[in-house]
Every structure is written in structure tokens, then in C-alpha cells.
Length: 470
Image (cartoon, rainbow, N blue to C red; front, side, top):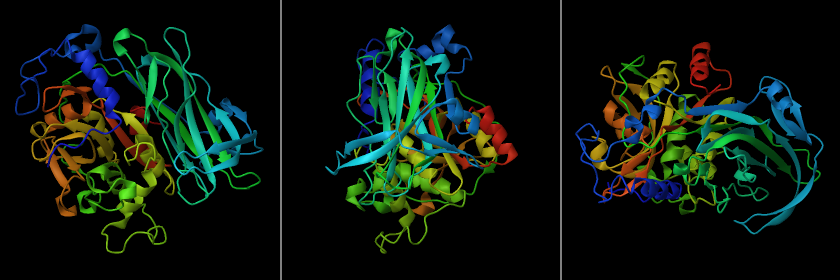
């Protein structure tokens, strides 16, 4: 399999990495690597050579608002708090009416709206990136917008950035779910689903942030969006080509029974949702994990899918994670939101620090979906290279190697793969890498989706709290 084209989300990361790495690799020749994927020569990794960066400092902080006290701590304009097993904010008495022209359909119309704004969240470690996620129900004819505004370490403020305009459906009365391009204040920018400091070498970071939810519905309607959770993962992961190796831990010899679906069996299906195949790694992975939890679309939900297509639920997931601006199904926030449309499910976008963290989840019965990029030579047995790919971590062998349901397989039967622990950990956690031409590109720094029930088992809740998810 040839290397996949660079997703739109990685353009900024690649540009920043190239600028930052120019001094480290002036000849643009890739550093030699050993069979396990670690560097054997070339530039020193600042993440490993700097005493400050070698300290065990938490550089990832997720915070979510989901309880009655959480919702009441925010500023409400037209929303009310709905108590219950899953407390939520809904439209009460709308704060006003506004017009919206959908850039993807050209349709204009009036919408009632109400807003909820979080308290200021101050960061112990100021962040270079922030990714938001939310869990909500949006009946037909309703939608929501999530925004972020922060204060930099120099004391100035960002604008209100749109992190997503989202609805679960795509009926005629719905808007088209979309990220918003072109947002920047010359200090930071929004890249699909990610707030990013433009020049991390400047030392500038985000010191605090607020989130704002805006809920919309047709004027005079009784329907309302219902938001159970909104949160953000803020991080400042050091630039690094390699990461320290973890030792096999609590999940060795433990494998979860997660359904297996191949994205490649859908090549050429539904061009309007990015044509199946390699473009569908994210929704395919999401569907595998959702079905592990016993959630899947109904026959009525799947009635639109061509009956000749296998695994129609994968087509359904692609349709309902599709970002009309990004023109693909790989929006991290939209995949987490899709997962939470199923009964009593939650979804967050997170960064983890090692495969030890992943093992804790697996041991508690929680699979995860990881995002990584690599050359074919950097992951033995994969048989392909990629500039961005999602797969499910479902277990670990007795030796601590990773058992992955990799949707980039030719059939469902071939989806289960075992990847060397050291190689997998490095390609997942690094923030910089070399492409086949020796150019410096970006890595995700440990990004993953974590999907879990609204009421996790006690052992699951303990692990989720330990990792900062709940």
C-alpha cells in the first residue's frame, strides 16, 4: 500500500515542524532508524536531551462539564439545566433569533438560540494545543456550535474561535455539520478541530480558556438540542522524534473482543462522503468500538445504504461523522460526538502519555482508538505508510506487544494485527517524524478517542479518573 495523501489537518503541523526542525536536519535526510523504529543517528531529540523536558510534568489536561453543579457554574442566556441521570443543558426561553446561511447548501434561515458559557479554566501547564469534544442529542431541525476563547501567557485574549458547528443528522431541515476554516489572530489558528499556537518556539502559550455552547432550533419549535457533556483537552507536548519506551504492564496477555471491520472493503462507496476506503479509518474504528459496547444503528437507520454493500453500519458512521468543510470523516471532535449519539455513551478526545496508560484502559475493559502516522518501514507488519491513520487498540500480547484492530486491512478477517510495542508507542506518541523524502512532518503526540458508558463500572471509573477523563 502506498503512503496516503496528507490530511488537511496535518498541513499546519507539517509546516511548523519543518520550520522548527530546519536547524536540526539542514540536509533534509532522514535519520537512520533501527529495526524497532528508534533513531540510531541524526539530530538529538530535544525532548530527551533537555533536563526541563525530561521531568515528569503532566502536559495534558482534560476538563469536562457534565454535572448539575458544572452546568450551574456557567453563565446561562436562555438555557436551563435539565437534571436527571445525565444532567444536560437545553433551550429554555431563547435569548434571541439570528440568521444563518449554510455555506455548504446556500440555504438561509432564522434560528432561535440560547447560550451557556463555562467558567474560566486556568491551566497548570499552559497549552500549545486544545481540542474540544462534546456529547449531545440534536433532534431534526436543531444544532449546536462550540466556541473557545482563551487568554495567552502574554495577557492578551484570543477571539471567540468556532470549534465546530454540529448536528447528528443531515435531513433537509438540518444544517451541514462543519468545521470553520480561516480563523486566526496571528498568534494562533484553528485547524479543523484543533486550536494551535502558531509559533511554539516563541514561548507563547494559552494560559486559560472558556468554552461557549450555542444551541439552535427553528423559531417557535419545541425541540431542543440536549448537551450532556462539553470539554477540552489542552496540552503542551514537547517536540520529539522519539519517546521513552514503556515496560509491559497491567494488560499483558489481555485482549478485548472488539468487532472487526475493514475500511478497504468500502473503496469507492459514497463519493459524497469521501469515497470509502482509506478515507474511512476514523468512522470504521469508531464503529468497531461502539459495537463492542453493544451499540449499533437500527435497520431503519441503515435503510438508505445500498443492500449490496457489506457492513452498512460503517457507511452510516462515515455519513454521520462527515465534516463538510474538511471534506472527510476524520474530524476528531465529530467522531467523539457521533459515538455519544448512541444510548448512554460518552466520547472524548484525549492524549495519553504512554502505552502503560493504554494498558490501564484495556485492563478495565475500555478499548481506545489511536491516531498515528508512519513510514511503512516504521511499523513491521502493517504493509503501508500513512500521513494520518486511526486504529483500535484492543489488547496486548504476553510480551507486551500491541494487539490492534487495524481497519487498513483487505478484509474483516485480516483486521486483527499484532504490532511491536516499541514501534507502535513511538509512532503514536511522537510529535515530529521524517517522511520518505527526509522532510520533517508532524505527529499527533498521543491523540486518541475514548468511548465509554454514561455509567462506567467502578473499575472503569477509577481508571478514567486516574487518566483525567472523568
